[in-house]
Length: 282
Image (cartoon, rainbow, N blue to C red):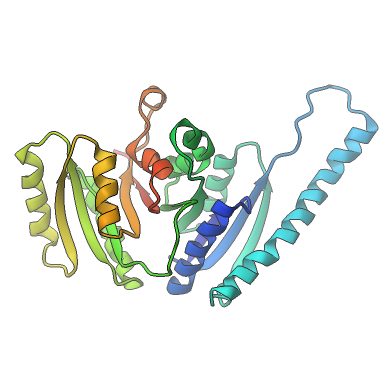
């Protein structure tokens, strides 16, 4: 991974995510592209007064100046954490659709991973505040690392959990997670949450263990419980999981109305950073 895209609105949530982006860039020798997307005020009238026209003409300049003032603190943060060597380039773009702009820049710049913050509120409020990160998780074709606002990074990645339902496509994600060992010496926890209490899930975990059990520092765990998110969160807390990795599946419109994907849900409600890999199309 040589290119990291870091979308930012310069909020506290974004600044916490920036520390993760810095650490990844420092370890991998990667470059960070910061991205700030802004919207111009929408004017619906056919006739635009001269004063208003001048205001809109000056709006881009105002946004540019504001962006320039916000950039030095990022460099200062890099210096403070001992990562002033990390190369950074800065992009500002006008756009009505923030998610679309992030996906477009990621494609244009051929970045390898998107690192971004998500607001750490609960319930329906989290869905609205965290919707940008959630939508990017489910639409980006490259890995996305979503950092909850409450996440505190100590600079180390010692434990990564990987959730699986034993689908063949998830093995590709597992292989990509294992590739991170080139830069981080972590213990991997392969987890399945069995809410139905059937032997099928345990047998499938045994098959996965037969395939990957020869690797060092890899655990294979089937957790039981009626509340998947509660059981998974308790395990992550107990084992001090630094990152939760999983495969993301796109949902159609009707499915989105009635059921948020588990990846999106966890990005809103977990304090553990979520590393998402989009499942390949069939």
